[in-house]
Image 1 (cartoon, rainbow, N blue to C red):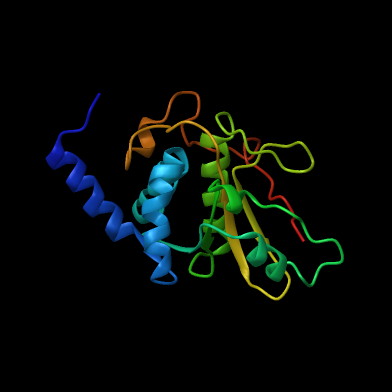
Image 2 (cartoon, one colour):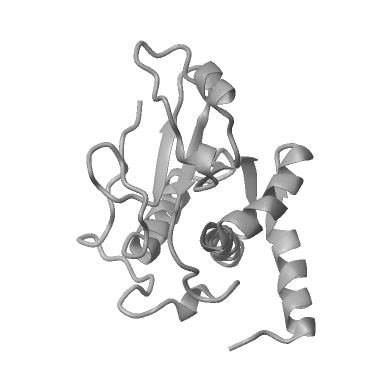
Length: 182
């Protein structure tokens, strides 16, 4: 189903209200992300709508694309820094977490992992598929690391339209544990 031009403009203006950027340069990267990884772009729009509807808060993007030099500098405090990152291939976005409570952070990670892990091709070193991590990098603050390489799931701003059985309705048994990334 194709969105009409006016409906697409309406969706775009909604996204502008839900997604903001740590720095001006990220706005251009956000537009590039739409061309390079539409699935991740749609995922971020959907989580922004989710947080706005459920928590009355938008999301702030703090990192999209990262060069090899930026990767080395960011992880220089580690004895064995990772050589690559999904950021280097337009498959990851970092979101600010400090505006969310501990329960909201858990809800956001559970929402993303429950809805997107089944479609995601990004794999952790452990072999596990995990769309959303809440972690800290040395000398930097905690944040959400969202990695996704897969199809567009649902429609923008329609998180309730995600394919069954991936509807968001967590029970204690369904909750996804946080992945500790040091």
